[in-house]
Image (tube, rainbow, N blue to C red; front, side, top):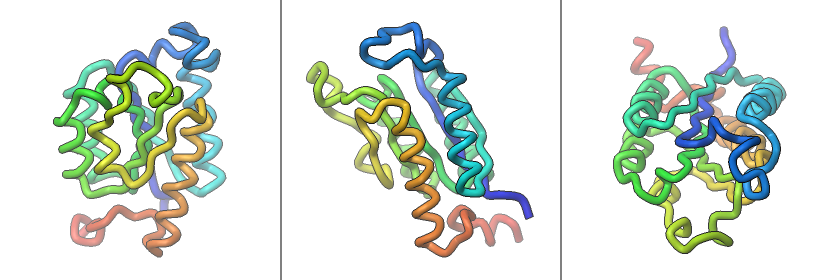
Length: 162
């Protein structure tokens, strides 16, 4: 039996981590974040798929695939957090635990960043913990899987596997 898989999904401009506003987002690159996520997931017996896109539709497609292929999602939607009802609908529609992550403390920034369309449909939210928020998100998913006794399998997986 293979390890349960989680999706680490990153939205627009996160490909520029390490170079874009390092005073806000830090020095670590997206590749550093991927390594951190793979290490944390392995500690919990989870496999990782890592996806980044600057395109809203690609993020929606990745969430839809996760519905059939993953047990949960750690999602940094970037600026789409504050604008995308479509992403919120996708998160809600996949019926998997999704943990929203933001590297910076969005509540200490511009007012338009204070509202999230994703938070109301997320299982948990980590804001302002730097890239450690991804580690916390993975640990939270592992906790949810354990608490559900689902061994990391997505809700409804038995029906899909039949």
